Image (tube, rainbow over all chains, first blue to last red; front, side, top):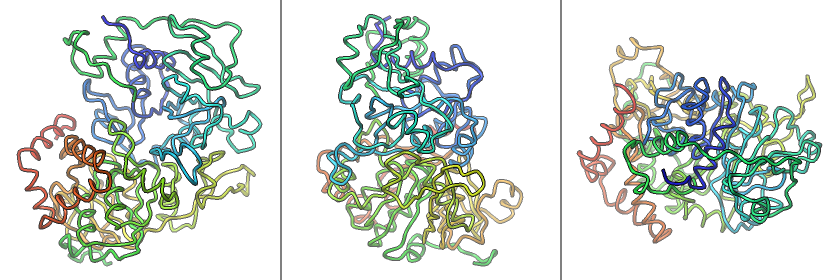
Length: 264
Length: 301
């Protein structure tokens, strides 16, 4: 078994956060893979819901969906409903977890997937919110998964596509965001939580072998540090095998020939 | 339109229902059940100054911008999918003039169409609160008159025309969708004019026998066109899978040549060909049947 890639580390750490019997609204890519993995290993009664209207799908290994509205995302679902319906179950409060990726995020967990630079004279136009804004506005516990790089972890995002704590708990409340909270950011280096008094990101646990200094050096702002920093257990062979099988659908492929998948 | 009339049309006749300057909403979602044949027909007819609206937009966004067919896009996300990267030509256009793109979240976009489908001028939502999207759209803060809760009001979006692709419809436009309906039912209710393209036009009796699957009633529909493989190279649930090789080729062309690449794509796939069936001929039966086989692996017939 080859060592876990950064994306695999992050995905496996994310999957462990999902508890059985809950409902997770997962974004495409690593959050979806983490959800499928959790369902296969420790949360068989986890219900996955996907933006395209798919409730409770089970993925075909090797044919994970590229987009959350395609046939592969609907495979073996127990309900296929309209997109508005799908989101409105969330607005009604039926989704325990909202799990999204992020292009750029800041120390309050605000996510930008719209513009790099001044929105009136943008340097880069990104693909946009899709359902991310809706997920973070309604799902009870919001979790974000992203590679840990300084260009992604910035002090202030250029544009708030999907709000976290804005500038703190009071700002969040007065903006009307009273239904839910951001709770975790999972990366290939660490597991971060939010300080409830300030709404700022806090280092809670390190990926195996990663130092606190290394995490800080890859973060574009000063992280709060938990009083007790844990080290996350390394991926088990079962977790790695299962995740790799989900991705390539091939049980027999040797680790040496396996292509390392880039971050989604 | 009245319920029982025969509304069968050609793609060209249906395209004549779309006028320069119209707001056109396209059904499906990203590369799924897209009314691709109808979109190409509008490009062939060289419509101009359209506002193209769609919940998640695939590379039709770039075809409509680069051809001059659309002056403005309204959506919540534009791209083919993460593995094809940020769409280069869309980027170029919006970075030059951000006002050509109106960005919503997925649900807030959907609520605009839902409001219109209900005959209401707006709907409240908990989306967009606290975000910078709020300031850049016509959405407004609103207080609930009963609980004083702070919410967002989104204005109804009443499209001039909705383009919807379905699996089956009858000649009167009664339409049935297999797989997720996305926002198509809201689009069909909301729009002033509705064009339905269908994989198959079936006898009215076939619709009557399965009336619980009918999601769009004929009385909202103005034209019905039978177009097998009408979403190709996008997918149609249960019928054929999306052709990722086609997306790869498009992306390669546009990554290399930018807007010129889009123009070349349009020349080759639209203007040099005599209609959508000629486009399918250029793809070839073996490739289409392979996409059909792959769909059957995912959705039991």
